[in-house]
Image (cartoon, rainbow, N blue to C red; front, side):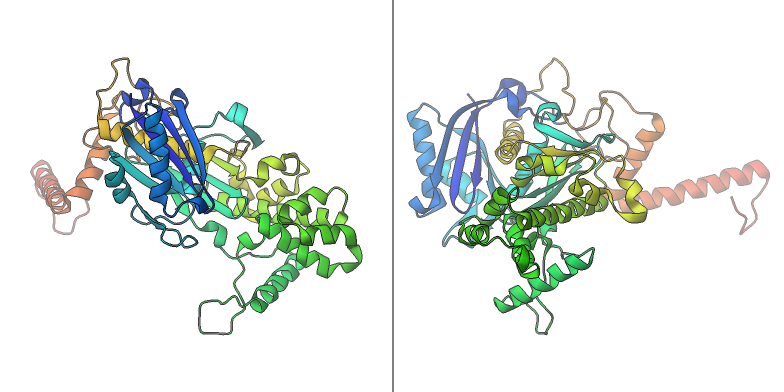
Length: 452
């Protein structure tokens, strides 16, 4: 039995799922995607981080439970972690002594391969596991372009963004982004006032720009588009329109542990809360549209996170302020017309993405022979068996159908120029010299300076 481990490690909780890997996933070629849905989950456990001193204590506890149940020997593990990962390592700044290093984990627990990925990168990989028919809601049909970039935006506690592109092996690779921390840019007078309100608010709380100047605090879009951001919007509106407050509901919101949730819950009975929700969703849509312009994700633009699926009625439909703000991009609005845009209705894509990444690791580690039944098409890749001309083909790649000769030449020449620049420069000079010599013989001489 081959086992892979997927983990979701946040600041408060750690969740682990152990999977028994389906044989079909291990015998697929490197140019084919694995399918996590074929595997069987054999153990799930969740732990509160405060009950343990270090991450190693939590993981050790989980693996002890697994051994007691007869599951021992993890081939590969991938942990989605809440924070930036550098060289397979993360330092949890909000938990003293929590420094996770993939190589240390691999050695300490005798796991053959370990990977750490940012939690929103895990969401990105999780997109590759979705059944779009059953697990997403379509906002714009668009036209999926094979091998085009995919982008994901998700508001919840914060605002996460990531993107995926096809790698050298023909599979999608996900990359992290801090796009949720770009500047909030107001689009009308009321949003101008919101920006000034937030600058004053955070300046009074002692937030520094980090530079030795008198510039006002920098306000990121996450300060507006998130659960905490919704409260910031409401806080501005209650100051801007004090006559619209309903004191009992206002007090309920201010005293709530989760103020964003309280605002959303009271919105249908409290016009000022409704105004805050609508304003936030309008700005959310505008930011999703900004992401669409940056990446032109004709492979799909996905709206994930905890807020979207719980408020789908505010997002879809022709009258949706979210969708109108997303698509209203002035003279470049036409660039967004063919982008498929979907809302992810599942909130488990993070652990699903970690599972997929662990499966890829396991396949690479074991290097088992490919099944004789033939290649499995990519879940999100070429629609046929050929390799697109813009992908540099690895030396070991075997094309299932041979491209046209000029494509083969272009791919080979691109690979040679990148690997052997001196040799190809010499070859180019030789080819030019030979051409000149042949022309001289054929035409009886070529004058100096003549154009060929």
